[in-house]
Length: 275
Image: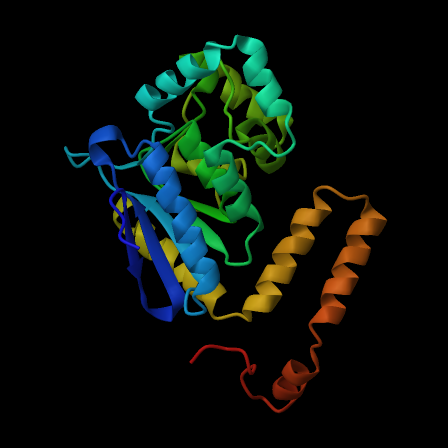
């Protein structure tokens, strides 16, 4: 598929770089861009050569960095007007339907649960829907000049529709998440790492290279083991301890380690390692 709002680039080592590419709109997540992200995830799950994803944002027209400023507010305003014709109750009824999931929320949920690991490489503005997209990635790395925030409450008087209040609290803890959401104040790269929002901080010119190098390490591992580990860790967030442990035991049994153990004993590389 051809993409108009993102750049899809396969790199060596099993890594694919996905660049949000609406620089004139601060890489705002328009409906079309969200559709394209969904197709990217389709492609990643079907193509065995894609073993890790890196998401980043195109710089603004003036060269300043930007990950994403969130939803396209013009589109959001039009959508809200359509819902409002039936009153607020029509919106609530839609959200109460267990089968209903806003488009960006669906993209984020799929990223969070898919077997292919993902890394968000963030510089410049990352807020609102951009933060929701970043939180759905397995790992976040940031530049020193990143501006991590959530401006839903400050700018819109609402909360995000793609899970920021849940994923942010699970990532950095409720107290820090509340401070970020209640104030809207941005965090730089170093602060983001200090509170556990990101794993690594890089100089701006080293950010994407650092993210790709990390993704290549993931891509060199056995894909089934990565997917199983990810599923087990996600389950650990939701299940009681005994249930979570049982989940991990079943996952281990589903991936026998005998062949890898023999290779290790013989000082040979694991059979699943990429050349």
